[in-house]
Length: 227
Ligand code: DC
Image 1 (cartoon, rainbow, N blue to C red):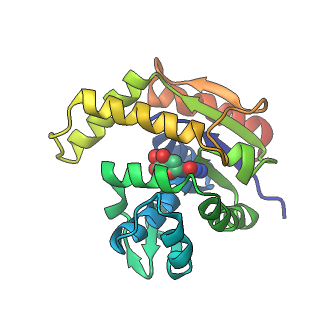
Image 2 (cartoon, rainbow, N blue to C red):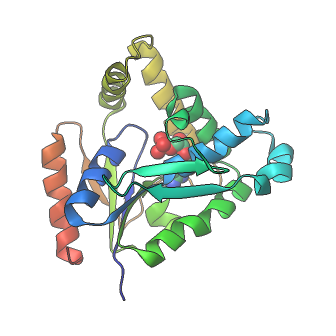
């Protein structure tokens, strides 16, 4: 049976997860947040005291990190398990964002996580978001979207997310710097950098509401895939 796959790539804070999650729910697809997989691996190395750039340590211990994606039966949300412990919340801090970005630059890391992502798409209709989904993970995805927004808009959205979680310590300048640094890191690494391929459809959400983005993407998906 044919499974449809939709790749949504783009920089940090472009709204990928908000959009992909809602779109998946409306279309009855699985939402796969691949950033959460990198974050979980980064969290493992953080817990065992190995830095994200220490490739020798990573090589030594990577097989001891068992990652599972579990979907909540009730609301369909994606939970990340690290060696059987639910770490879904622990991987969301700004510190983990930086660690995930650094760790994702290693070829060994990307190769190790590749099959897990492809396996999801073999078994289900998926909306998968990340940095290299359309270029590397699912090069034959039915629809490829490159979702972006200006760094300032993305930083402002991040501030609102942090505030909603009760974190009022971060300043706009710091969040903007983190976004710019992560953009640079993610798009300049040698292996599978963030990039818009020629089949990606560019959607700039800087001036769009979430509803407008959802409608735009839904139309694009329904043109190619059955609901
Ligand atoms: O989507 P996110 O911000 O949760 O991702 C965290 C980091 O993981 C991101 O800065 C780069 C890395 N990542 C990646 O290299 N490839 C992906 N497909 C997804 C995330």
